[in-house]
Length: 536
Image (spheres, rainbow, N blue to C red):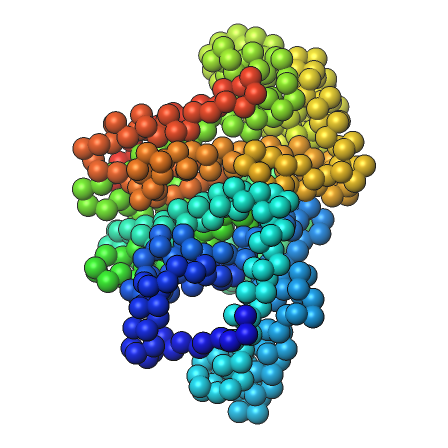
């Protein structure tokens, strides 16, 4: 690229010419983190969402595909770090930004926020900076595009761009919020939080319950010794009764209600209205942000919403939410890759892997209540078995001694012996410096020798789980449900569909998520969730 045209969003004539150009040309577009640029263009009615994505080369996607990170080294994927890594002296944006920052200082603008907000939009350093980003983006695309296509394949590049487009559609459509209900809940929580704080002060004499030293001093005065930490985990581990137990209960309740209020309820109640007057969240999703490729969300992180906060996020009028979650998908993938005969047979016969693990660890349960309790305890034990976790972690998870944990692990190995052999082989490969594995979908996940014990298996398993979720995503689009996608949550898809079609589309959703990895079936059960988002 030798010329860059700077278009001003506040100039109708510029916008009309841009709209005309996009509508009458078909040349590829480049952007780094294209979802941001596309959202601006779509909201300004410059071009359609799919039309922009179909001609877009997102250099952020290309950079992450080529530099996924290995758990030890963590590459930065912004435009400037990417161009520095791939283009060397051909990059210009860093120098242009330094020039713009000098200009800001000359204007008396001492902070970056003030610089962006107050500098003249027609100033030459500002225009040069904008042009430098364009030049670097084109240079980066020209460098990475042939590398990705030759080393990973054009199909991988196109797959990842399709994923980005479909998930970005969720951002554009948004998630409707019942702001009235959220505001009422926030008001109630305000009263609860204030009452709990008053109780902590008046009854226990702690002027500021947010002060860890004051909380520790209270325990030191009452118990004769202060806890090392005032974290919930540390406090719950204390054997307390009477006043100390009541204080702990009130303190943790105050913290929990306060966090829900400050992090979720106020934010939900203040959700801005869209052009149609409805209030919606528009979270940003990273389809390659995690090293394994698993989806992440931010602004806000809806994937981490507590169960009792989800009810304020609702379907549109006349619509309902349906949901399907892969069943024990990580265990299934690990069993397939390890060719573990015992686990594979459990899945092929429709058995419960956690019940099988519980029986291997503690024997046949004498009654239903014991069987249920053992199954719950078996979850961390089985996950520890497939990921090769040590006895200390198992002991901590189950609240037992390390010696007892070793006995349980020996029983698991006797019942499912193929898994430890697979783990040892994966660790040996990573330790030898060959930690790059190409998974289904064509991406590469990397494991550094220094992280072999923690990452050798889970990077491959979780990365492959992401590809299964993506396969379902693409199947849903092929079935005409691309615009029904509502939210990805870890190993789960939530769709928004017409109420009258919910049952039929549940069957289609379950079918889209039914897969096979090796000899192991991958299954999911779809259910109608209703108007409110909830944890099923």
